[in-house]
Image (cartoon, rainbow, N blue to C red; front, side, top):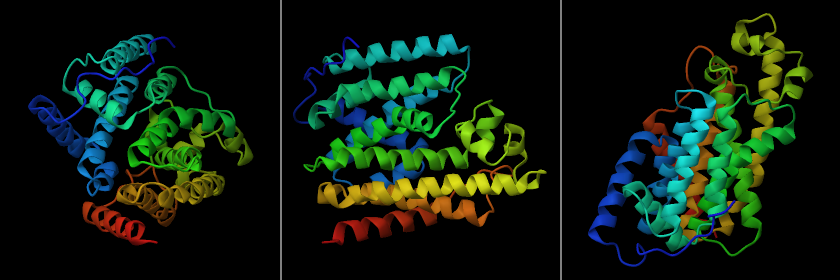
Length: 303
C-alpha cells in the first residue's frame, strides 16, 4: 500500500514539554483501559514503557472503530481515515497527542510501518461477516490482530536474534486465542465466532450449542471443544515463551508477565469447567499484580 514508508519526523530527540504531556495523557488512558497489559508494562524502562503505551493506544483505537456502531462499510471507511492519520504521523505531521506519541515511538524504535498498517488491516476483518473455517484461517486472522502487535512489541523490547519475530507472532496468537475463549459467549451474542468451523464439526457442535455451553444438550462436546482449543493455546504459549530470554534483559519481564496473566486465565477457564456463559472471566487486580511481579522477577533474574 502506498504511504507505508516511515519518515523520521520532528518529534525525535529529547522530550519536549508537548511530547511529555502527550505521553502522560497516553499513560492515563492505558491505565483506564489496558487491563492485563497495564500490569505487564509497569516495570519497563521509561522509554520502552511509553512506546508500548503509544502502540497499545493506537491498536485500541483501531479495534474500537472495528467494534463500533454503524454499518460495516462505514466502519471500514473510518478505519481508512484512521490509516491516513497514521500515514501523516509517520511522515512527521502527527495530528493530536495520540499520533504525536506514536510518531515519536515509531521513530525511536524503528517500528515497521507495515506492522502498524497490519493492525488496521486485521481490524478490517471484523467489519464484515467473518467465517473462520480452518486453523489456517484462524492463524491468518490472529496474525492481523495480534501477531502484528507482537512484532511491534518485540521491536520495542529489543533483540538481535532473528528467531524472535516468529516467537513474537506465536505469543500474540496464544494471547488472541485466550481472548477468543474468554469472550466466546459475548462474541456469539454479536454474531461472531472465531473458532474454526472445522473444530465445531469435529465435536458435532453448532453455534447454538456454544451459547448453551455446559448446560446444553451437547455439554460433553462443548467441553471437548474447549479443552481442544485450550490445548492449542497452551502449545502457542510454550513456543512463544521461548522469546523471553532472547529479548533485551531490561524488557524480558514484560512478555513473561503478559504470558503469566493470560495463562492464568486458561487455568481459571478450566477450573470453571469452561463456563463463559454465566459471567465474564477475569482476575482480581491483586492477583494480577502478584502474577506479573513474580514473572518479571523470574525472567529478569534468570541467567
